[in-house]
Length: 410
Image (cartoon, rainbow, N blue to C red; front, side):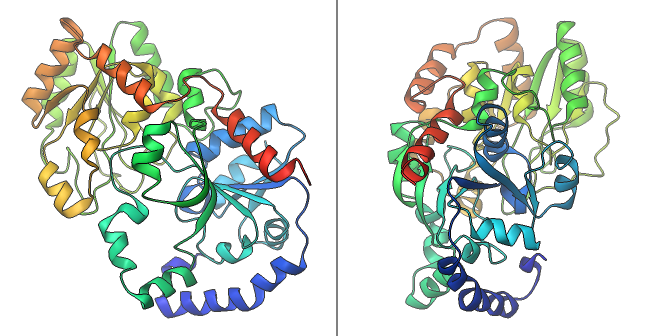
């Protein structure tokens, strides 16, 4: 049962019952040595950092005691035939394993919902946040700060588990640790291991099942087009609290964009934010492909020749390939005043041509791919500034940290 769809009184009552009945159980039921649970975003989607950390454990650490927790029935049914260590929440089995787990690994801020905060009360929580980027998050965000600006609000936020202290927060390097994560999270450790999802960008063949829950049909289709010399351009805008993107805001005219792509050997792949629902958009364009917006995008990135981004953290993953990046920033003032605050260092990371309309964007694409990529050296500097390690061993380093700090001496 997803309690988030119910009223605040129901959530508060259920949370109270969790404190009364579940938290005492965490002291009575002993933790099992070396047991770990992983849980992805939106009640357990199989995407992002948790997905690739799970694949690493499944293929490289076969003696580790671990489980993947999901409240998504489709994900559970898809994975359980391949992996026996999938837990469906809620279930008696899930409750028991959660209560006995020493470590929980998450990559989002919804892990504590539906009494999971109480079930993992005495576990060590490792946060692999879903992206290094430019938006102020958590305790550094003005809207979050407003939520805790009174004693009553802070009490309620603590009561429902929205002000957690983590045992470790994963980062990619010193710059983002100090400028991005330290203002946002309370934790015992910041560890510059890198992100599991970036392991498959650096090495696309790292995992046997890396494409599970990805849009495999689109990946294969684009791969075949690239063999014919067609350049693939990914458009991956971020989510806006007030709604909108380049399509719905009327910045991109699809028929004209399709004709531009046909004339210049491009194919555009649109990966819209998972929180958006675009079931009615036409797919009748030969050179505009819609990547399933609830599927994992990261296995697709090695097949991308250039990315159109805005304020999204996916840009900071794609940059590891050091390929052209274009910024469509038509709504920056609105975004910063009505959607999300941006860190002041955002401007320093705009290493690519910037446009505010389709005409300029098309000219930028043609210039870069037919004349010169002017930003290759600058992208290299951003990579060096952002990443302590540029390899496919991020998951290995995270596991080593967990093992040494929470498992070895037990």
